Length: 403
Image 1 (cartoon, rainbow, N blue to C red):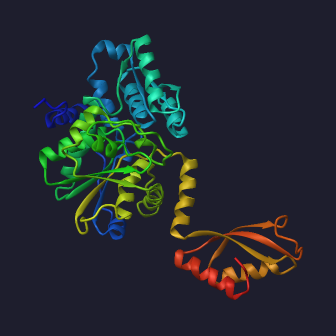
Image 2 (spheres, rainbow, N blue to C red):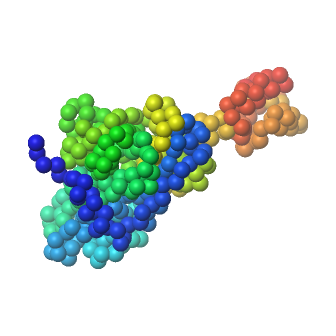
């Protein structure tokens, strides 16, 4: 059998190496998330790292392993954001110049933060493959060392330190639910956990819009997956890494895929219940638990890997609104009312009597039909839940309003 590219010894060595620059993040129990999932949930909060992501672990380990000549010349990487941030931050701490090539779709917050941390940022290409090609070109022309974001042994070993921490912080853990895109985090986690606690279940979570690992498992090798729009941009790497796949395929216990609506709702739940801002990839484990994709964990101690918190504030606002709609806490309907004094007041009276709150009202007179004494209004209303929405519509019909 070929020697494994990353071993438990490598991960333990990485932990000693990065100890002075990467924090041990908390892994607290979550009572509210336990209540809504039926499992005993703990959250490994690696969004608490300085740059808001687990990527710092691998980045610092890889930078510290560089030969002296490469430290002086600098490094380059292609990244959708978090790997770039980790390299930029630890490159600055260690005095190593960092260049990152980001695809055009990279979140604005990650671009701005990376620049603020002192890295040279180049936006190039419509996907990760095109960004990688440009990074390879610059590495060759400028003599820079390329550091892969998820398919490098030093990166994988660094990410595996998260697994060591979970096992120490939660000795009775039964299962760990981890997001997967390129596979570096999952690979390191699998090596560390299965070497020390082989009975702990490791469940990988993808978005239905990504599916890199699922495709690789079906094909028996890494394959390219066309990019689709996803909230979990950190998982949109097009292809799982070759080294990562070799470490994952016989260690991961299950792979599940969740719909985008569940990721959106999980972001909202983390914000409301845990008072924690997370990005789409970090919300995927909770999304899988809430959507019923993972069975057999009721009453079990389950660790959710909350891998990052770098979500664009504009996107976060949209996600919150969509989550409220999914919950039935924000609803919209069109209704015909009298366009004479008192028509709108009567509509508002019925809404208020039902215990709902008007968020916005828009009149649609131009397209309301031939009767100029009536008009359509589009109402956005805040409600408690889906049952409340149904009760509101019943009240409107009883009052003679046509929705």
